[in-house]
Image (cartoon, rainbow, N blue to C red; front, side, top):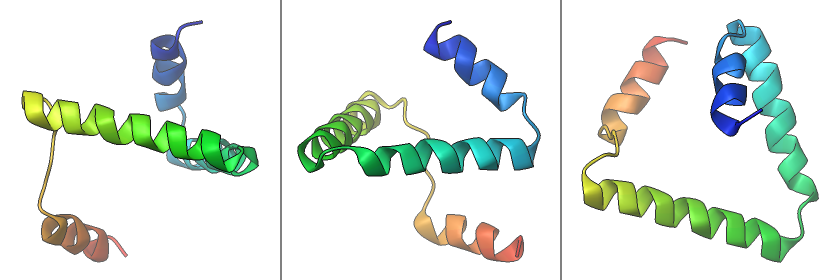
Amino acid sequence: MTFEDLEAEALKLDPKGRARLAERLLSSLDNLAPDENARIWAEEAQRRADAQDAGTLSARPAADVFRDAQSRI
């Protein structure tokens, strides 16, 4: 199964299932060695910076994100 296939299947889960999966995936990162964790985050930061430079990154002002989140609580 490719990453894209797995992602598509995960997105079919109901919100509670997606949240549960996200929690388990995030907690699995806690077991990484510090240097491995730093490497992964550096790669992700570079991927996002490249997408921003290419104009393919969807971005919103933080104030808008926080306002929308607050309105959902």
